[in-house]
Image (cartoon, rainbow, N blue to C red; front, side, top):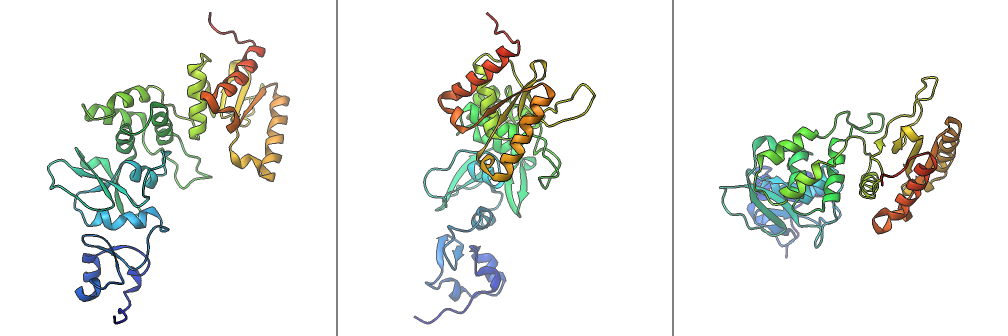
Length: 313
């Protein structure tokens, strides 16, 4: 077999559509060469794609089908929303295709045929993707209520501009409610209606959300989220992940990065500030979160009772 002529640089390290390659001058004979991986009708790759970023891997599957958009788990990953890990092959992509369009049956693609409005599609890395609010509603088919609340919290949280490349939430609670109102009868709608009542602005991580939900289910008062401590002289101090200003109790969820040497130093300084301000710090980690976070809830309950809170009888 003759050595294949090299592809243009733009097609060397990514999957591509036959249409795009032909426009770039690649011959039909070259596109039929055995050296190319066939990823489905009209899609080729010069090398394996499993290690490539999702946006690069999914792009040709969106481009080759008009009026489609990445959706569900694929959209959630592209939008960097908390999600359940996809089962099966990582090269299975979720794509939404509007009702009324021709049937689509392709390898590597899970097709969802349903209503899709033009304002429910955005662009991420040049790819058509369902908006955060539409992705949230679609994921109600797959997630538990708690997982859906965590995703909703991530959608509406106010980002920290000094740490992130944006300064606006991905969407608002009103946007999520609009999706519920617009798509009556959709699968997962009951869970979405239940979840939206529990979504709050201020949670910085899924772990914080799951801790908050466990606290509420256990009968603890609902905490405030990332609200700064204001001392008696009016000075603004750090923001506990969850807190009860009335009882001067702050709860800090410590992820894996809290084992870093620099973070340990910062955590010690934070604990000293709590003490100086007359607050109680409750530190929660992954080991407190098993069995519906009962160990975490017990630890927080003890701190609240010691600070004067009494459960309703």
